[in-house]
Image (cartoon, rainbow, N blue to C red; front, side, top):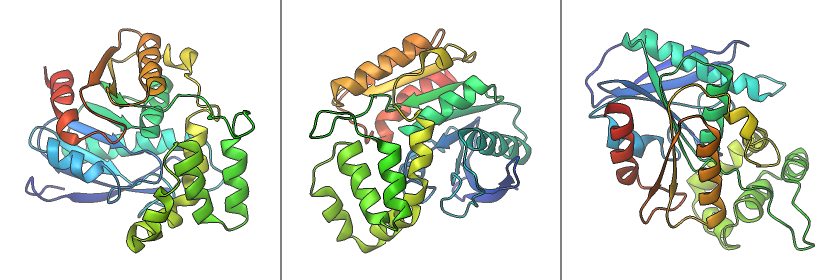
Length: 278
């Protein structure tokens, strides 16, 4: 599997339970695996723009998490299966590129998955997380915490995929009420979001269900880590990243100027390069 740096090379990794996981790599240099957050896949979300930014210095690997894009899905779901998926992609990337070591970069709940995978001991050299949303459960109008998992699973069971996406965007993430309306006006993106809505419970489980910082789990990470946030993100998100960095032994903590949860790849790049290549 070799190709010019400008071209993506695709493959299929087989997870431990037999689930096919679609992945691709582009660029030259040390292998860096990207791990997406909720509702994203290789072609929808930050993977391609981040790859464009880093492919001059890294062999950048992106993949479709199970149930998304060209990857399969096997019931029942468990976070352990997603860790096995990531381990399979790491192994496939090593085999395809001849690399002996691999680094990980996760964004949003993808960062949560990176931390859980590292704590589980999958063989990686270094890890980077950007704004894993360990910010607790948002309160409802009655002041009580939302039941994210129960609500999303009920909506999906009733066939209300669009409503599940609405709930994620507004009640879970805290976006404005008009945001789902805007996405409905974009037929292609809205079709994608409705199709991958059944994977929302997976990300909720990756975040522990309660979205609290898993300090005990993080304390078990034994590889160098960089934990990042944006200076324009809410205080709860920034505080969560500080607590994550404090919990991981020896972790570095950085805040990127003028960045939000939707971080610009050009803002990520200098910190990624410094941490992994410095």
